[in-house]
Image 1 (tube, rainbow, N blue to C red):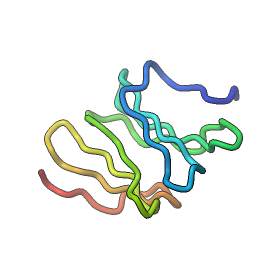
Image 2 (tube, one colour):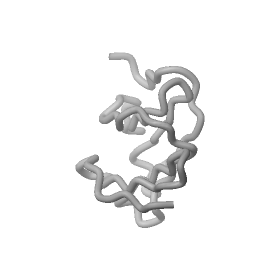
Image 3 (spheres, rainbow, N blue to C red):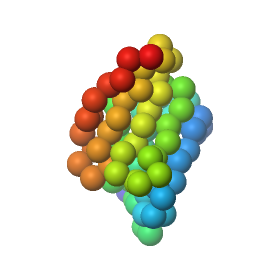
Image 4 (tube, rainbow, N blue to C red):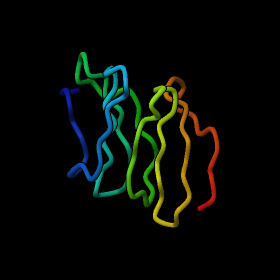
Length: 88
């Protein structure tokens, strides 16, 4: 697949602190595509939803996604599994 392919416009983007990943949140459906910066290839996509913004934690092990209702989802930046949801 082509490098840096993303659905719709990016509403929010965040680089991992080590520069290895770029996460881009789609304005169209709220899904988050994670790219490997060295290749531009998509390596994972978080499910669609109603997020407002995304950010990698300073230590780099977690990607946070703040949802429209105020809750914050914490995703493991190695396995891309949902770790927990903090209520807003």
